Length: 313
Image (cartoon, rainbow, N blue to C red; front, side, top):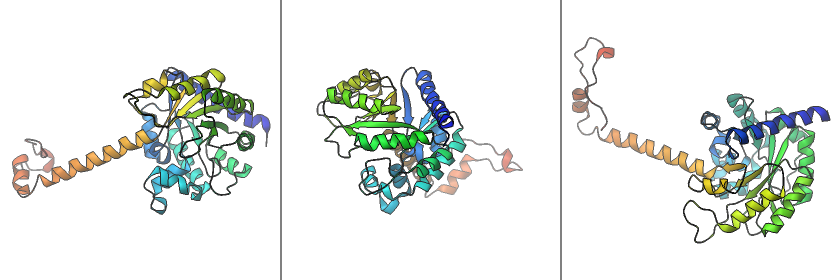
């Protein structure tokens, strides 16, 4: 592999990241979930201003209903069964729709803390890189595994965003660090081995947190991360439209949001379908009379008919 060429590719990728952060005033969005595994939704996110997207294998398992999974928790248990080739195909499709200026990082089989033996090789990284991917979304739980992942990614022109987790997290999605001081230490070690962006898992639940706020331990961990490293930092987990400003106030550069977008999309579909079904039911039992009252059929063509009032009330 040509080292200079792959360094240049990574430089272009990081320029996309820095551009997104700058354009959005210091904190940007990494849109995932439904906007990362469906090209239509990815384009909608980009049209709305998103400049960073993340397809990943658990979200794809959920989107495909793999073995009947209907929750992200269940999808996490089966994510390793999604073929890498399917992730590559999804990524290539999204790239062809959103264009070259959008940053795409990918979570793929082998890049997370896996529950079964699952290698991630140079050939795997090369396939993703050639599919239009800019980076790897990595959730390894040891520095040794992360160091190997960084080497593979960089050799194939991919940057790495990797994460710090809390030891008590339900799913271990990063290097464990319990205290803010440990977060800072682990972050410095991650930066030293070449991680391009360092994230903190922030989905832990705490009692007594006011609406629109984030728990003090999460705030302190994010601030410790920000002060420890010079690379862009991310927050992932528990972020929504109400507490977004609280996260931004910590100095985080990138908000990773999937569940909140998925929930809004589901609600929009549910409400729209209900509206159509309610409208259809309003036509019974006197549907023909309603139609005759609403339209003037005396014109010679349908195109000339006059709408007298809305069909659906």
